[in-house]
Length: 300
Image 1 (cartoon, helix red, strand yellow):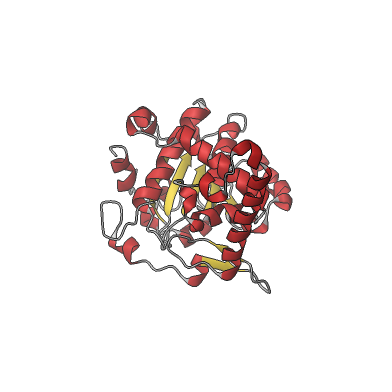
Image 2: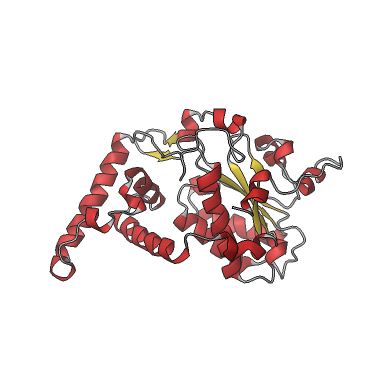
């Protein structure tokens, strides 16, 4: 993640000057010392977080001792040397995402490193044609300066899930390197647009793959997710699934049968929305398509 500290073609003065509130940095559970962090980079971790990171390291070192004869005496430090997990604040993303279960977190970290080796970086020339098809793109920012990712399902009904995922990885890495500001803006908002998708041709499998990718490899990056133009059965499925989804995750997701949701307009300025979303709210002939970030991203 780049430390963007000046106005660029991707970072406006408004974004650069934005200061997150304490609640945007970290949510504190009532009557508990445990917290839920949203902003990680360059932040001093609290005692609970430091304690859990050390407990994870101790857990891994104990596992390594048991494997010593076959693995040559590896340690936590040697396992994650020269990787993204040398940064304890990044490790915390995975600890928090695994609800501080050390065993799950450790294996999740190993899988993440494998995933990075297999999928990153995504080169522009490898996705150039797919980017132009508009499967997924970036358009504007919300009122908290989170970049907005648009997942336009009608454009990949018949596309390969592998291709769509490659585009997703490209944009997510683009956002992290070009649109985020360390210590201030580290999350994105996702809008899933199901308009013009019939009940029988919603690309459920690809959406599941994208969701898994977001939750497993981009820990603590999702601020909010809004599903627009959802058929009745999608809304029904969501109400059934809510009972088994953590409350914190539930609060991030909104399912709407409308083309525009008034809650979105409370969180995103109108000039940051695509023309089709604006026109669902106002018939004003405004004509804004891909944001500058998305257009320029096609050349990056």
